[in-house]
Image (cartoon, rainbow, N blue to C red; front, side, top):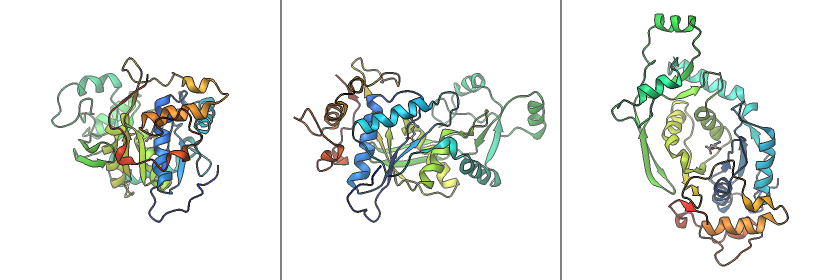
Amino acid sequence: MTASASPRLVGARDGRFAPSPTGPLHLGSLRTALVAWLFARSQAARFLVRIEDLDPLRSRRRFEREQLDDLRAIGLDWDATPVRQSERMPLYESALERLEAQGLLYPCYCTRAEIREAASAPHGELPEGSYPGTCRSLGEEDRASLRAAGRPFALRVRAGGERIEFEDRLRGRCGAVVDDFVVRRADGVPAYQLAVVVDDADQGIGEVVRGDDLTGSTPRQILLARLLGLPVPRYAHVPLVLGADGTRLAKRIRPPALRDRHEPSARTLALLAHTLGLALGRDRVARPADLLAEFDPDRLPSGPCVLP
Ligand code: GLU
């Protein structure tokens, strides 16, 4: 892929789109990708694509290929060959070692059902569904007997019950008390929260633009970046796209505009642009770059978008 033609600005906020290849992209994901691209390119910054394929059971190369094709079909470009998280394990392992060396990790033997049950009781300021800390102060003896019983364990970070706030470019002030969240899953796979923080820092991402279903994860990621001594990016969480019935679009819904491959980009792009308040009155947009002159992050719609 070619770099953007405009000269790179000093202090530009590099951006990225980081899909999980677990299904086809739906229109909402494409719209988020377009917004992330517009943020980066309007600042003459780099735009990267990262394949978040850490879940071995759900990730498929076929979906990765289709997702990249769909991004290309609406005319998006990126500055380097996309990296795959599955090929970056040493980076995540070294981050885990750094946390471990600071005494910040502990093994958690809880099953999902146990967590659900314990998390349903109120726990002070922690948001609903948070981990209540069951395994935080297990003694060595208890740990040894759980290990001996063959109970698999995840690694959780000691978050210290801190409230983390941040200023979202699209949603304003956001924040939450952070629970002791999982950084390595019981199957040994680094957790999304860890990998995303390590990768954004490693790839020099200055502005994370993504779907607002991840707003709730951001305080955890900011905490993790601080614990690892990594820079904290700026965040912009893009409101979700809802189907005509008001429910979230599921990944399995293939964007209808992309099913017809004859002329996918111009119409799909115009449709996506309209939902962002751009290119109104045009039913075709040849390239995303044609939207740059009009694009203003402060004028993006702040509510969820309902597709006709
Ligand atoms: N891989 C995540 C997803 O597809 C997005 C992660 C991110 O943008 O931080 O939902």
